[in-house]
Image (cartoon, rainbow, N blue to C red; front, side, top):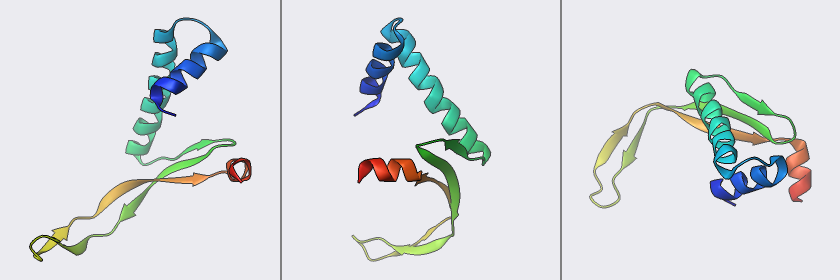
Length: 90
């Protein structure tokens, strides 16, 4: 399933136009991204928790040349599924 399929499902459920359904999906995704950028977490009941975690700086190796490179510390997105989602997928 992709973003267009989600928009189609929203359109089928709520009605309106497909453009409005796409705007709803875009708004939801943008809201999650903005919240994660601020460092907060997003909790959606029955789905899970979107959060960020800090990955420490480290030394890595370029596989082509074997040269060591420095990878800076960075924040990366993280998702913890809810129990209801885990049970539904079983």
